[in-house]
Length: 328
Image (cartoon, one colour):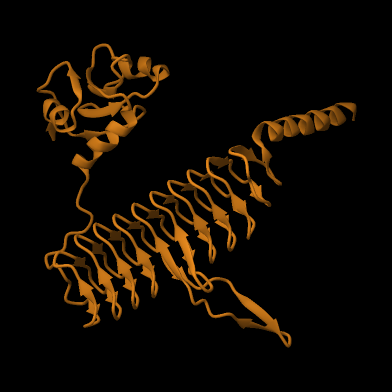
Protein backbone atom coordinates (compact mmCIF):
# COMPACT_ATOMS: atom_id res chain seq x y z
CA UNK A 1 0.00 0.00 0.00
CA UNK A 2 1.25 3.49 -0.86
CA UNK A 3 0.28 7.02 0.02
CA UNK A 4 -0.34 9.20 -3.00
CA UNK A 5 2.25 11.76 -1.92
CA UNK A 6 4.84 8.95 -1.90
CA UNK A 7 3.86 7.99 -5.45
CA UNK A 8 3.90 11.62 -6.59
CA UNK A 9 7.33 12.24 -5.13
CA UNK A 10 8.84 9.05 -6.54
CA UNK A 11 7.68 9.69 -10.12
CA UNK A 12 7.57 13.46 -10.20
CA UNK A 13 3.80 13.81 -10.56
CA UNK A 14 1.87 16.92 -9.56
CA UNK A 15 -0.75 16.03 -6.93
CA UNK A 16 -4.17 17.62 -6.41
CA UNK A 17 -6.22 16.50 -3.41
CA UNK A 18 -5.55 14.53 -0.24
CA UNK A 19 -1.83 13.61 -0.15
CA UNK A 20 -2.40 11.09 2.67
CA UNK A 21 -4.82 8.94 0.66
CA UNK A 22 -3.57 5.33 0.60
CA UNK A 23 -4.12 3.03 -2.38
CA UNK A 24 -3.82 -0.75 -2.25
CA UNK A 25 -3.28 -1.29 -5.96
CA UNK A 26 -4.20 -0.31 -9.51
CA UNK A 27 -7.36 -0.97 -11.47
CA UNK A 28 -9.02 -0.18 -14.76
CA UNK A 29 -11.89 2.25 -14.95
CA UNK A 30 -14.35 -0.59 -15.62
CA UNK A 31 -13.07 -2.50 -12.55
CA UNK A 32 -14.36 0.34 -10.32
CA UNK A 33 -12.49 -0.71 -7.17
CA UNK A 34 -12.49 1.45 -4.03
CA UNK A 35 -9.08 2.04 -2.51
CA UNK A 36 -7.30 1.78 -5.88
CA UNK A 37 -5.63 4.10 -8.36
CA UNK A 38 -6.66 4.24 -12.03
CA UNK A 39 -6.05 6.54 -15.00
CA UNK A 40 -7.99 8.60 -17.52
CA UNK A 41 -6.40 9.08 -20.91
CA UNK A 42 -9.22 10.71 -22.87
CA UNK A 43 -11.97 13.26 -22.10
CA UNK A 44 -14.69 10.77 -23.06
CA UNK A 45 -13.86 8.74 -19.93
CA UNK A 46 -13.94 11.66 -17.48
CA UNK A 47 -17.65 11.41 -16.61
CA UNK A 48 -17.41 7.67 -15.88
CA UNK A 49 -14.36 8.29 -13.72
CA UNK A 50 -16.23 10.94 -11.75
CA UNK A 51 -19.15 8.55 -11.10
CA UNK A 52 -16.92 5.64 -10.10
CA UNK A 53 -15.93 4.37 -6.68
CA UNK A 54 -12.25 4.78 -7.54
CA UNK A 55 -10.81 7.50 -5.27
CA UNK A 56 -7.82 8.63 -7.33
CA UNK A 57 -6.73 8.95 -10.96
CA UNK A 58 -3.64 9.67 -13.00
CA UNK A 59 -4.78 12.18 -15.60
CA UNK A 60 -3.57 15.15 -17.61
CA UNK A 61 -3.46 18.56 -15.95
CA UNK A 62 -6.10 19.90 -18.34
CA UNK A 63 -8.44 17.00 -17.48
CA UNK A 64 -8.92 16.96 -13.68
CA UNK A 65 -11.54 14.54 -12.35
CA UNK A 66 -13.92 16.43 -10.09
CA UNK A 67 -14.25 14.97 -6.60
CA UNK A 68 -11.21 12.69 -6.99
CA UNK A 69 -7.58 12.94 -5.98
CA UNK A 70 -5.54 13.52 -9.14
CA UNK A 71 -1.96 12.82 -10.11
CA UNK A 72 -1.07 14.80 -13.23
CA UNK A 73 1.13 13.59 -16.07
CA UNK A 74 1.09 14.45 -19.81
CA UNK A 75 0.78 10.75 -20.70
CA UNK A 76 -1.42 9.03 -18.08
CA UNK A 77 -1.18 5.50 -19.48
CA UNK A 78 2.62 5.70 -19.47
CA UNK A 79 2.52 7.10 -15.94
CA UNK A 80 0.29 4.30 -14.65
CA UNK A 81 2.75 1.80 -16.15
CA UNK A 82 5.50 3.37 -14.04
CA UNK A 83 3.35 3.19 -10.92
CA UNK A 84 2.55 -0.43 -11.70
CA UNK A 85 6.15 -1.34 -10.92
CA UNK A 86 5.43 -0.60 -7.25
CA UNK A 87 2.70 -3.21 -7.11
CA UNK A 88 4.41 -6.07 -8.94
CA UNK A 89 4.41 -9.23 -6.87
CA UNK A 90 7.19 -11.78 -6.64
CA UNK A 91 7.25 -14.13 -9.64
CA UNK A 92 9.01 -17.10 -8.08
CA UNK A 93 10.63 -17.25 -4.66
CA UNK A 94 13.94 -19.08 -4.69
CA UNK A 95 16.27 -19.24 -1.70
CA UNK A 96 19.50 -20.25 -3.43
CA UNK A 97 20.90 -18.07 -6.20
CA UNK A 98 21.66 -21.20 -8.24
CA UNK A 99 19.27 -24.08 -7.64
CA UNK A 100 20.91 -27.38 -6.74
CA UNK A 101 19.16 -29.17 -9.61
CA UNK A 102 20.57 -26.88 -12.30
CA UNK A 103 23.03 -28.46 -14.77
CA UNK A 104 25.64 -25.85 -15.65
CA UNK A 105 28.59 -26.71 -17.90
CA UNK A 106 31.93 -25.94 -16.21
CA UNK A 107 32.96 -23.67 -19.08
CA UNK A 108 29.91 -21.40 -18.75
CA UNK A 109 30.63 -17.88 -17.50
CA UNK A 110 27.94 -16.48 -15.21
CA UNK A 111 28.02 -13.03 -13.62
CA UNK A 112 28.13 -13.26 -9.81
CA UNK A 113 24.51 -12.18 -9.37
CA UNK A 114 22.88 -14.35 -12.04
CA UNK A 115 19.93 -16.41 -10.76
CA UNK A 116 19.42 -19.93 -12.11
CA UNK A 117 16.22 -21.83 -11.34
CA UNK A 118 15.41 -25.49 -10.83
CA UNK A 119 16.16 -27.96 -13.63
CA UNK A 120 17.79 -25.34 -15.83
CA UNK A 121 20.45 -26.53 -18.29
CA UNK A 122 23.28 -24.18 -19.29
CA UNK A 123 25.50 -25.30 -22.17
CA UNK A 124 29.18 -25.15 -22.97
CA UNK A 125 30.93 -21.78 -23.40
CA UNK A 126 27.74 -19.84 -22.59
CA UNK A 127 28.02 -16.35 -21.09
CA UNK A 128 25.30 -14.75 -18.98
CA UNK A 129 25.47 -11.14 -17.82
CA UNK A 130 24.73 -9.35 -14.53
CA UNK A 131 21.33 -9.62 -12.83
CA UNK A 132 19.92 -11.95 -15.46
CA UNK A 133 17.45 -14.62 -14.29
CA UNK A 134 16.92 -17.98 -15.97
CA UNK A 135 13.74 -19.52 -14.54
CA UNK A 136 12.94 -23.21 -13.95
CA UNK A 137 12.92 -25.71 -16.76
CA UNK A 138 14.64 -23.50 -19.31
CA UNK A 139 17.45 -24.69 -21.56
CA UNK A 140 20.28 -22.44 -22.71
CA UNK A 141 22.43 -24.36 -25.17
CA UNK A 142 26.08 -24.07 -26.20
CA UNK A 143 27.84 -20.78 -26.95
CA UNK A 144 24.83 -18.61 -26.13
CA UNK A 145 25.48 -15.03 -25.07
CA UNK A 146 22.93 -13.32 -22.79
CA UNK A 147 23.39 -9.76 -21.61
CA UNK A 148 22.50 -7.92 -18.41
CA UNK A 149 19.08 -7.68 -16.74
CA UNK A 150 17.46 -10.32 -18.94
CA UNK A 151 14.62 -12.56 -17.83
CA UNK A 152 14.00 -15.98 -19.36
CA UNK A 153 10.73 -17.41 -18.07
CA UNK A 154 10.09 -21.13 -17.39
CA UNK A 155 10.39 -23.74 -20.12
CA UNK A 156 11.89 -21.44 -22.72
CA UNK A 157 14.68 -22.68 -24.98
CA UNK A 158 17.58 -20.58 -26.24
CA UNK A 159 19.43 -22.68 -28.76
CA UNK A 160 23.12 -22.74 -29.61
CA UNK A 161 24.94 -19.56 -30.70
CA UNK A 162 22.01 -17.26 -30.04
CA UNK A 163 22.79 -13.74 -28.80
CA UNK A 164 20.51 -11.81 -26.45
CA UNK A 165 21.31 -8.19 -25.64
CA UNK A 166 20.50 -6.36 -22.42
CA UNK A 167 17.02 -6.29 -20.84
CA UNK A 168 15.66 -8.98 -23.16
CA UNK A 169 12.53 -10.73 -21.90
CA UNK A 170 11.62 -14.23 -23.11
CA UNK A 171 8.17 -15.41 -22.05
CA UNK A 172 7.33 -19.05 -21.12
CA UNK A 173 7.60 -21.65 -23.81
CA UNK A 174 9.29 -19.43 -26.39
CA UNK A 175 11.88 -21.03 -28.67
CA UNK A 176 14.82 -18.90 -29.75
CA UNK A 177 16.96 -20.38 -32.50
CA UNK A 178 14.95 -23.40 -33.65
CA UNK A 179 15.80 -24.78 -37.08
CA UNK A 180 14.43 -22.92 -40.06
CA UNK A 181 12.03 -24.88 -42.25
CA UNK A 182 14.52 -25.81 -44.94
CA UNK A 183 14.49 -28.91 -47.17
CA UNK A 184 15.73 -29.79 -50.62
CA UNK A 185 13.99 -32.41 -52.73
CA UNK A 186 16.34 -35.09 -54.01
CA UNK A 187 15.33 -38.37 -55.61
CA UNK A 188 11.81 -38.09 -54.24
CA UNK A 189 12.91 -37.33 -50.69
CA UNK A 190 12.84 -34.14 -48.61
CA UNK A 191 16.43 -33.77 -47.37
CA UNK A 192 16.96 -31.47 -44.40
CA UNK A 193 19.18 -28.44 -45.00
CA UNK A 194 21.43 -27.74 -41.99
CA UNK A 195 20.58 -24.40 -40.41
CA UNK A 196 24.01 -22.99 -39.63
CA UNK A 197 23.13 -19.45 -38.57
CA UNK A 198 21.99 -17.90 -35.33
CA UNK A 199 19.41 -15.57 -33.77
CA UNK A 200 20.27 -12.10 -32.45
CA UNK A 201 17.84 -10.29 -30.15
CA UNK A 202 18.98 -6.73 -29.60
CA UNK A 203 18.51 -4.72 -26.39
CA UNK A 204 15.00 -4.37 -24.91
CA UNK A 205 13.38 -6.99 -27.13
CA UNK A 206 10.47 -9.02 -25.72
CA UNK A 207 9.46 -12.42 -27.09
CA UNK A 208 5.95 -13.64 -26.24
CA UNK A 209 4.86 -17.01 -24.87
CA UNK A 210 5.12 -19.92 -27.31
CA UNK A 211 6.58 -17.71 -30.00
CA UNK A 212 9.26 -19.17 -32.27
CA UNK A 213 12.21 -17.32 -33.79
CA UNK A 214 14.11 -19.56 -36.23
CA UNK A 215 17.86 -19.38 -36.70
CA UNK A 216 19.34 -18.21 -39.99
CA UNK A 217 20.28 -20.75 -42.64
CA UNK A 218 23.83 -19.42 -43.07
CA UNK A 219 23.95 -16.11 -41.19
CA UNK A 220 21.40 -14.74 -38.74
CA UNK A 221 17.83 -13.86 -37.90
CA UNK A 222 17.87 -10.46 -36.18
CA UNK A 223 15.26 -8.63 -34.08
CA UNK A 224 15.95 -4.92 -33.67
CA UNK A 225 16.22 -2.96 -30.46
CA UNK A 226 12.97 -2.31 -28.59
CA UNK A 227 10.82 -4.59 -30.74
CA UNK A 228 8.00 -6.38 -28.90
CA UNK A 229 6.66 -9.68 -30.20
CA UNK A 230 3.38 -11.10 -28.92
CA UNK A 231 2.44 -14.70 -28.09
CA UNK A 232 2.15 -17.38 -30.79
CA UNK A 233 4.13 -15.54 -33.46
CA UNK A 234 6.27 -17.35 -36.05
CA UNK A 235 9.43 -15.69 -37.41
CA UNK A 236 11.18 -17.78 -40.06
CA UNK A 237 14.88 -18.08 -40.84
CA UNK A 238 16.81 -14.99 -41.89
CA UNK A 239 13.97 -12.60 -41.05
CA UNK A 240 15.17 -9.17 -40.00
CA UNK A 241 13.02 -6.81 -37.95
CA UNK A 242 13.96 -3.20 -37.36
CA UNK A 243 13.72 -1.23 -34.14
CA UNK A 244 10.56 -0.69 -32.08
CA UNK A 245 8.31 -2.93 -34.16
CA UNK A 246 5.11 -4.47 -32.73
CA UNK A 247 4.16 -7.93 -33.98
CA UNK A 248 0.83 -9.15 -32.55
CA UNK A 249 -0.45 -12.65 -31.84
CA UNK A 250 -0.57 -15.38 -34.49
CA UNK A 251 1.26 -13.35 -37.09
CA UNK A 252 3.72 -15.19 -39.29
CA UNK A 253 6.66 -13.78 -41.27
CA UNK A 254 8.21 -15.99 -43.94
CA UNK A 255 11.92 -16.44 -44.50
CA UNK A 256 14.33 -13.66 -45.47
CA UNK A 257 11.74 -10.89 -45.20
CA UNK A 258 12.99 -7.57 -43.84
CA UNK A 259 11.03 -4.99 -41.86
CA UNK A 260 12.07 -1.43 -41.21
CA UNK A 261 11.62 0.44 -37.95
CA UNK A 262 8.29 1.01 -36.16
CA UNK A 263 6.37 -1.54 -38.21
CA UNK A 264 3.15 -2.82 -36.60
CA UNK A 265 1.34 -6.02 -37.51
CA UNK A 266 -2.05 -6.60 -35.89
CA UNK A 267 -3.13 -10.15 -35.08
CA UNK A 268 -2.95 -12.95 -37.65
CA UNK A 269 -1.05 -11.03 -40.30
CA UNK A 270 0.65 -13.29 -42.83
CA UNK A 271 3.73 -12.10 -44.70
CA UNK A 272 5.34 -13.69 -47.75
CA UNK A 273 9.06 -14.41 -47.89
CA UNK A 274 11.94 -12.50 -49.49
CA UNK A 275 10.23 -9.09 -49.43
CA UNK A 276 11.13 -5.73 -47.88
CA UNK A 277 8.72 -3.60 -45.85
CA UNK A 278 9.74 -0.01 -45.17
CA UNK A 279 9.59 1.79 -41.83
CA UNK A 280 6.36 3.21 -40.33
CA UNK A 281 3.98 0.67 -41.84
CA UNK A 282 0.89 -0.66 -40.02
CA UNK A 283 -0.93 -3.75 -41.29
CA UNK A 284 -4.40 -4.46 -39.89
CA UNK A 285 -5.48 -7.86 -38.58
CA UNK A 286 -5.92 -10.93 -40.81
CA UNK A 287 -4.22 -9.21 -43.74
CA UNK A 288 -1.87 -10.89 -46.19
CA UNK A 289 1.26 -9.04 -47.30
CA UNK A 290 2.32 -10.61 -50.58
CA UNK A 291 4.84 -8.11 -51.93
CA UNK A 292 7.18 -5.40 -50.71
CA UNK A 293 5.96 -2.11 -49.22
CA UNK A 294 7.85 1.05 -50.11
CA UNK A 295 5.46 3.71 -48.78
CA UNK A 296 4.72 4.26 -45.08
CA UNK A 297 1.07 4.04 -44.11
CA UNK A 298 -1.76 1.74 -43.04
CA UNK A 299 -2.63 -1.35 -45.09
CA UNK A 300 -5.28 -4.08 -44.89
CA UNK A 301 -6.91 -6.92 -46.78
CA UNK A 302 -6.19 -10.14 -48.70
CA UNK A 303 -4.28 -9.29 -50.79
CA UNK A 304 -3.33 -6.15 -48.88
CA UNK A 305 -4.06 -2.65 -50.12
CA UNK A 306 -3.81 0.86 -48.64
CA UNK A 307 -6.47 0.91 -45.95
CA UNK A 308 -8.76 3.52 -47.52
CA UNK A 309 -8.81 1.60 -50.79
CA UNK A 310 -9.51 -1.63 -48.94
CA UNK A 311 -12.38 -0.06 -47.00
CA UNK A 312 -13.96 1.27 -50.19
CA UNK A 313 -13.62 -2.14 -51.84
CA UNK A 314 -15.26 -3.90 -48.90
CA UNK A 315 -18.08 -1.33 -48.81
CA UNK A 316 -18.67 -1.74 -52.54
CA UNK A 317 -18.60 -5.53 -52.27
CA UNK A 318 -21.26 -5.60 -49.56
CA UNK A 319 -23.32 -2.97 -51.34
CA UNK A 320 -23.37 -5.15 -54.47
CA UNK A 321 -24.14 -8.29 -52.47
CA UNK A 322 -26.99 -6.53 -50.63
CA UNK A 323 -28.29 -5.23 -53.95
CA UNK A 324 -28.32 -8.73 -55.44
CA UNK A 325 -30.06 -10.10 -52.33
CA UNK A 326 -32.74 -7.42 -52.53
CA UNK A 327 -33.35 -8.29 -56.19
CA UNK A 328 -33.91 -11.93 -55.22
